[in-house]
Amino acid sequence: MKYMFITPSYLHLEYAYLEQGKTRLLVRKHWQESLGAALLNKGDMVPLSSTSGRDTVYTFDFEDSKALLREYCRGGAIRWFTTRSFLLVNRPLRELAVLEYLFLHGFPCPEPLGIRWECVGPIFRGAIATRFIEGENLLHLVTGGAPLDERVFHEIGVLIRRMHDLGVYHADLHIGNIILVNQGAYLIDFDKAKQFGTLDQRKRAQNLMRLYRSFRKHRIPLNFFRTVVVGYDWRSAFPSLCKIYSKVGLGQKNRPDVEMR
Image (cartoon, rainbow, N blue to C red; front, top):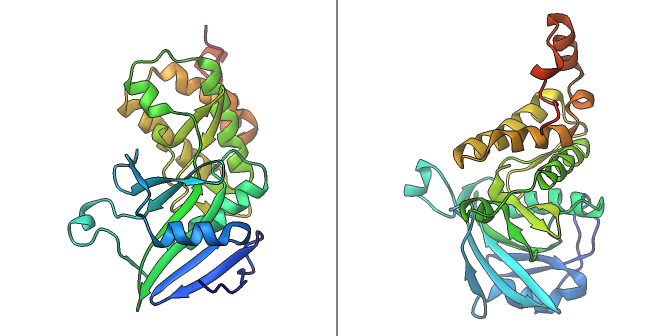
């Protein structure tokens, strides 16, 4: 394989670029050969069930650990007509840009390794490779009946606030995209995530409500979501909400940051 060393201006890590027929690869320069072979040939990969229920996910050996390859699939009713094709959107490249931005800011997320895409006219298909995070998926813990620790949910709130302060909106923020590692938390699956200069109160609230619906869906006691909100530090994030509380004279017991016993 013969690579060119081309990195788009909005990316900051070093990448190697390969064209092979209609297939394009953009992989980390330091591991170009091993990553290129993995993205072009899934023969040695192990299928992994996806928490989203849509994307096809594989793991493969990488360096002294493992990596993950996720192939983009459609959800919703349109999947009955096309499962892997997307019109005018290079989803692997879009996710790579957001993921790299967070990774370079030290945010707990998968390390980006590379992407593969095929383009036929305006139609794109593709996949993204990241380091595999060894930990427990929060969804699996909840559905498996594991005891829940409020301190973990406080940490999740802190993590989401940090992501929002970096200007990133996670389009699929649900408990299946939270990985717990040594009592810390990682966020995964930034497909369709968006990066803004600053994230306004409305977008922050929408993102938190997406997580809230996930708590309700899986019947997680809502006091744990309230702990997330406490960790998020809602007072500094939603000053307009604080003003509303002040104007209507709500007592401390009615506020979302009340301490839970």
